[in-house]
Amino acid sequence: MKKTSINIGIIGFGTVGAGTAKILIGKQRELESKLGFPLALRNIADLDTRRDRGIKLPAGVLINDAKAVINDPAIDIVVELMGGIHPAKEFILQAITNGKHVVTANKALLATEGQEIFRAAGIHRVDIGFEASVAGSIPIIKVVRESLIGNNIQSIYGIINGTSNYILTKMTEENVDFASALKESQSLGYAEADPTFDVEGIDSAHKLTILASLSFGIPFSFKKIYTEGVTKITPLDIQFASEFGYRIKLLAIAKRTGKDIEVRVHPTMLPKDHLIANVNGVFNAVYIEGDATGAQLYYGRGAGEMPTGSAVVSDIADIAQNIVRTLNSEYRTQTGLIQDGTCKIKKMEDVRCCYYLRFSVLDKPGVLSRISGILGGHDISIRSMIQKGRKAEKAVPVVMMTHEARELDMVRALKKIDRLSVVSAKTVCLRVEEGEG
Ligand code: HSE
Image (cartoon, rainbow, N blue to C red; front, side):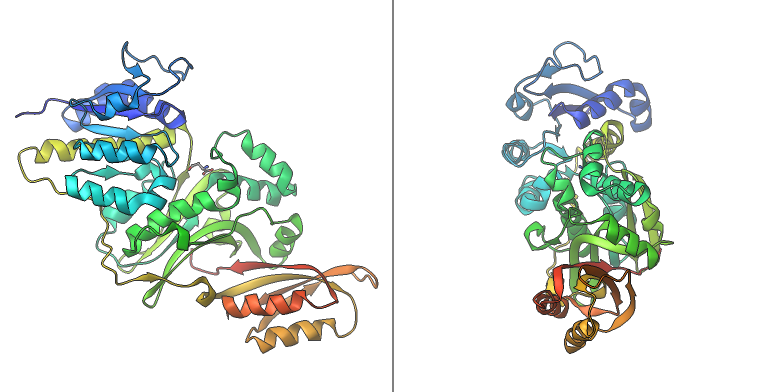
């Protein structure tokens, strides 16, 4: 049987759905000439069939029944762009069972239910494309799955949430507080349906789960990822960080240390001249170190209608080419997942890094020696220190940078320090990455 066109059905006509449809329809001819066969957008299903998305669809394309797309025997690729876990998961599993290839931008779903979805895809010999699930327009999934296939990845880290990066950029450049920066970021339209996903680091952790699984062959383990957001960052810490020569960024970090993999999301101090420290606004950037390639940096728009639509279309085109090429031969699911069990996620308490600490203390003789005594007692050594102002009665900030220490030692030491009567507020603790880049 000669296949003359590949039929596509989209579920979800929101921002990304509209961007995808604009590319598929507006660039239909160019896509056909590049691929050698046409991509036909057969249906888009969404409960809201009336809202203007800035695109005119041919009559009959927009329908309100997702199941009609999933069960249509003529559709080759189902594109899930509705987001959320349910019913997106059930729709995808049904599409897979029906023998359809799937493209999805749903990072939350893959991070939490990825094992089951990829297992089903393997059984039914269909592909899952998920380029749009991480870092929007940056083709990072393709890079990790295909371009760097000859590498052992040592580390992959970066800024993969535009909303929180915008907030930190505003706080740094305009000295505004978190609440006002958050308000502004919400008007950009990049925030998740639940904006706490952005500011509490959850969206970054979803995306990091996917990157870590692909890079290190570990199962999708969202629940095991240490996650801390940007809500507690203050202009004061941004200012102190700057005095020490650093910027604060919300980093998603996965790196190999021995046999273990560290996987964590938290605000991180980076030297000001580090490339990622200079990624501002809503932009994303991912730094990867492969054993063959050395360091690489990928930068671009991590969200938005057309950038994310572009990533979805790249998956559609890849899968369509696979279908056409392998039509008469054995189909093998191309997950790119290894999961051979050789690596496991390191416990956060065993992670080692340098720290920034801001103590709020009464300015009395002996205070510093008590604090440094506790730090020393937990094997934590101080690298440098700043104290600003002198107020006999009120608390003053004392800021320290430490040498590398173990997370568990730091947690235990801070617990003791925060109980001292001369300490008037919970100590602010930020992790520091010196890194290359
Ligand atoms: N809420 C996400 C962000 C959108 O701010 O980056 C893209 O996943």
